[in-house]
Image 1 (cartoon, rainbow over the protein chains, first blue to last red):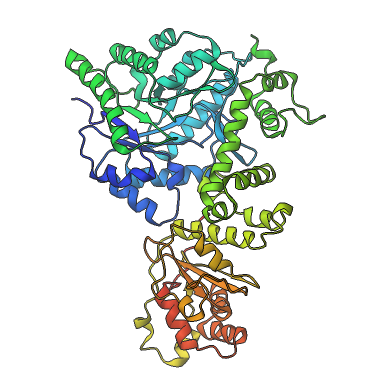
Image 2 (cartoon, rainbow over the protein chains, first blue to last red):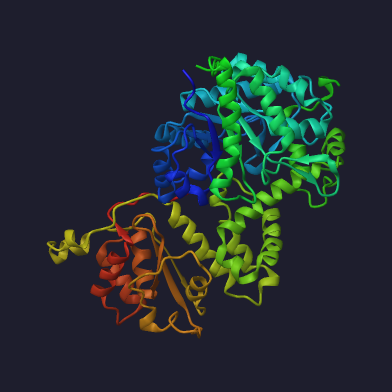
Length: 288
Length: 281
């Protein structure tokens, strides 16, 4: 049976009315749960209304799974309450940290992929999945810094997290393109090795080049359309692993909803083509 | 590459944060940041993380204080916000709630000394956000009180509605200034500014004002209130009975019309039967 989730969009507040009126087949919408962890008011009611029309995904940005400390229990309880309320089709977080010693740093920060980090992150994913009562998917990060303390290759690290926790993976193809340029690895090789059976969701977004350093520093800025090179990588991934729910993220210089829908339609076309080629029976996820 | 040489995750994070928040990108002398991390911060790309963190915090303060931004302009606001971020970085992933200390920061901010109303305007921006995200709750229905004997009514304890926020400002027409600089505000249909002439005309009357923000359902609405209403709401919030709140209001303004005061607070949706707690707990 084909997935109900086709090509989706990150949902911005200015697009609520357009999203409510939209009936594009396969459209699904993603929000950061942090923006809806409120006690009441119109935000939650607006999201409830969207949820009544479209499948929803909660994409967390502040669980700090790759920190030394476990996820904040109060934050986890609020997250669980949203999951219970909205019954989202997908729940995801990042292979990164954002919290330190009571501070919240609004970025997805890097860490050395050591065996200690692997053990801690697996524990944190396990705790999260226990509290939420469901599997989550972990997103590969954008890299800017060369860390010489990595003991694990990123794909082996992600695969081991899947094996230990039963989590799924969120493959951000733009992040791979950005990281490949910044760290000097081959994006195609990385994508060809990525554990396809664990991929529950794909992200696409635009990036920019650093004003001073140019192509030597790609920035995962989410403020432009998806780049042709990233579309090419996306087609390669889908051709290998089959159709997966695919989401366009746009957080800066946000155009009208119809412009974003047109971009999502490109992804929908790629998914339809691979479905037509008979690859629709690929397993959707390893997570239970 | 040697994993054995790598600092433990906690040590890595501690050093990384010191470098991330250091104003010039270098760790303060004697801070114990490992040399391997110092080298990391010298990579040009480290600036991406520093800029992303800083921008995320400043963007949040800007989004949460639209009236302050409108008064001072974006460049001034972002320069001031950057200093506040350095003093008080966020402590919660919900950036909608970031900036609880921003009004106090502005009150002591030397370059804002010529704008004595700025801190109060920031407080009302904060009140708006708190009201917007507060718990939902039923407003107290005056009809339910109609049958009560005077003694029972006086002993009754009512609480402010969970989405009600109010403030009194001595000396300065903060509410009027704030209102003129919030383009997203719904107007109070029974606005009594026509009565006292604060907002209706083009001239500001430079004396103290009170503001009440309520959100009976979805839309945050503002109301002009005086010292008596502020005292009444303060007494209700402190758990006082209606009689105690009425005495507090009369102490604040000896000629107060308590019947009208109570009716207006009921109509604004400022009162409820049960306290539902803070919006950011």
